[in-house]
Image (cartoon, rainbow, N blue to C red; front, top):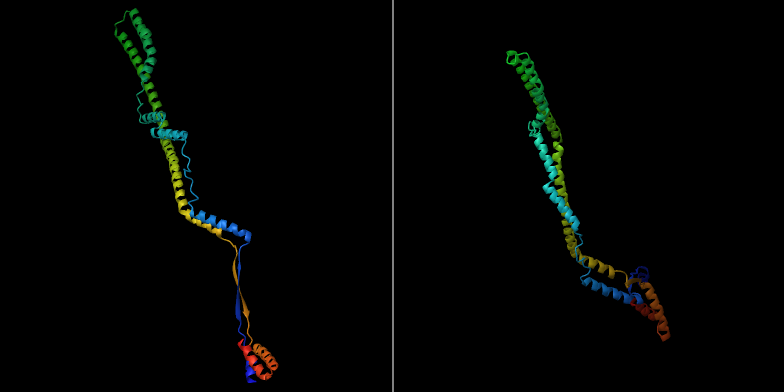
Length: 292
């Protein structure tokens, strides 16, 4: 009884596992297409495609644009003849080159003084001579005094006329100097306009060179990244769930008591049928049940 008590009361069950593996193939009609995809993916991966556009992707300057840029460049380098002449005149004026250097001042003075001189010659001098001649005192001291006084008046009038004209010319030229001095800054600023035009031409040509350089960089980067791009495309084509294999583990439990009783019952029945002692058959059957 102690044996049976230990067998049925103190035993424990320890599970074992049975592993079942199931393989699942892709759907039949799909298999041929998958083979084509994998074959095409392998061919694409091993090929040299895609390739970069063989020609330049930069549009160069048209003849009209190039002519315009060249014309602007030459104009900026040489300057404007009109602007250069104007700046030279402004510089001469500011430096006072025209002060007391009016080529028309003498002619203007002659034109203004001619009537005064003619009046002296045709009216004043003959009048004095005639007056003193009629009085019989043509060579007298009073006659000489009158002539000298008239000549002095003539000379003073002519001198005053000349001085006033020269002063007016000087004043006008000085005003021109002051006016031009006020415009000197703006005229000097025009030089930067030419330089800015020249810089714009340089910027346009630099932009074209940068575009051509970027085209070469894009080609270089394309070739560097092409293997990785091909690998990524290849992976995307062959990836996915196209069937597979799964495993399932099922636990199997062992109960020694149940196995012993089952074996003992079977052993007793067999022993009785064979004419042997039932107890002996039960014990033998139980032991076989434990081993099973």
